[in-house]
Image 1 (tube, rainbow, N blue to C red):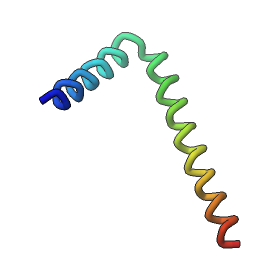
Image 2 (image 1 turned 45 degrees about the vertical axis):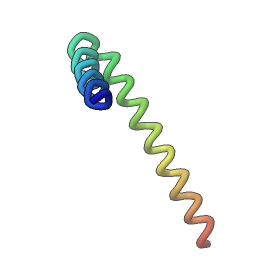
Image 3 (image 1 turned 135 degrees about the vertical axis):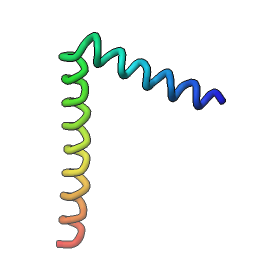
Image 4 (image 1 turned 120 degrees about the vertical axis):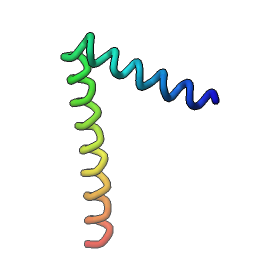
Length: 52
């Protein structure tokens, strides 16, 4: 039950954040996307060096 409350609360906060602070929300998502790409690149480099 508590997990469901936190999930819906998080979704509501996300919608509120995007609706009232769209430029800040875009910056946050750009930052997260860049971080995910950096992590993926690091894994790719690791496995390339491991095999080569």
